[in-house]
Length: 153
Image 1 (cartoon, one colour):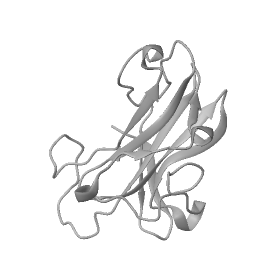
Image 2 (cartoon, helix red, strand yellow):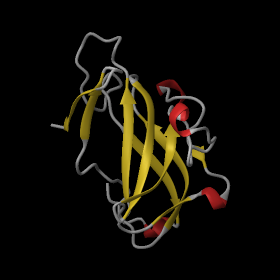
Image 3 (cartoon, one colour):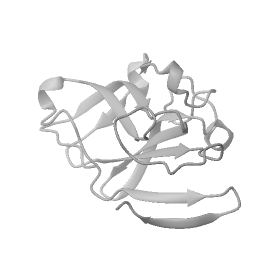
């Protein structure tokens, strides 16, 4: 989603939100079509390394529905600088291997969703409090390779 800002902001905290099937997630930050970096990362430490604040690496633990928390970026030098026009891509991974019913998106805890909440300053530069995915993609993987990658219907 494109970040709707009137000027630059500093992200000093983040939180991922999924439901019971969520296992890991991250935010990819793009500027002018180029990957700037990654933050808000939980559960990918084996791929991206460990960073306790989830900036440039991942927290040690994966996502757990029953342990949702705001992760603060306490070092001002590590805070994420967002500019007008930047794009954030939220990536969530779910594990439905133990369920026998279809997984649907929705607001109920038995449904699934993929959200990231950001805490930024100065708030006056944030034009809209919520951003929605423009081109969401569903990717199904059985741990041996991608089976299906398609726009979310």
